[in-house]
Length: 269
Image (spheres, rainbow, N blue to C red):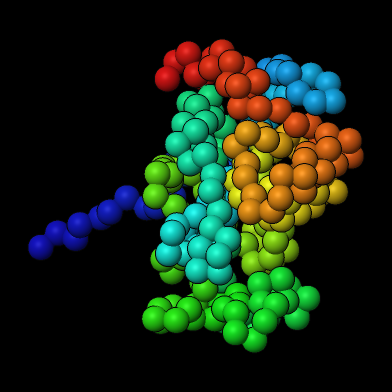
C-alpha cells in the first residue's frame, strides 16, 4: 500500500494572536512579526472638566464587579444588608454599542482562586469586619462554594448582562483590577490607551481600578451614570469630583453614545 504523505505543517500559513495589536503571520518561508497600526478613529464628546477627544481604535470598556454577589437579592451584599443596584439594562446596551464601534469589552469581576490565603489582612478586613461576617473566599451559610470564588454563582455575571464570545473576562483579587491579574498585559497587547469605566461600586472597586489605571498611564473616563454604589450619595459625589479633578474625565453615557454611533465601524454594523 502506498504511503499517504500529509502536507507539512510548515506548508500552511497561519496567524498567531487574533486580538487587536497582536499577531505573527507564520508561513512556510518565514515569519512576519509586523503589526500594522490600526487606523486612528477620533471621537470627541462632552466631559468634565473639559470636552475630550479619544481614539476609538485604542479605547476599551471596563465593566467592574457586575456580578451576583453584589447585585442579586440572594448575593453576598444583600445577605449583609447592603444589596447593590446598578443600571444593568443601560450598561448592557452601552456595552453593545461599544462592541459595534469596535471597542473591546472587558468584564472585570472578583474571581478568587480556590483559596484567599494569598490575600493580606488589610484586604481581608475590607470584607470581614466582624467575626460573624462572611469574608472573601469563605462559604456563606447554606452554600458550599466560597464567596467570590472564580466559577461560583456569586462571581458570575449578573442577570441581564451579556458576555459575547469576543468579550474579555478578567478575574480580580483586590479592589483594583490590576494586582495579580493579566489586565494590564491584555490592554497593552491590544494597544489600548483609553479606558471607559462603569460598574459597582463607584467609590470602591471602580475608583481603585481607575486610579491604578491612571497611575499606569491610561487615559480614564468615568461613565458616571453607568456606575452605582451602596455608599451615601455624598461619597460618590466626592469620588466623581476626584476623578475629574485629578485622575481623568467624567462623562455620561448620553455624552459618549453619539460619538460611538458615528464611528465608521458602527455605521457598518
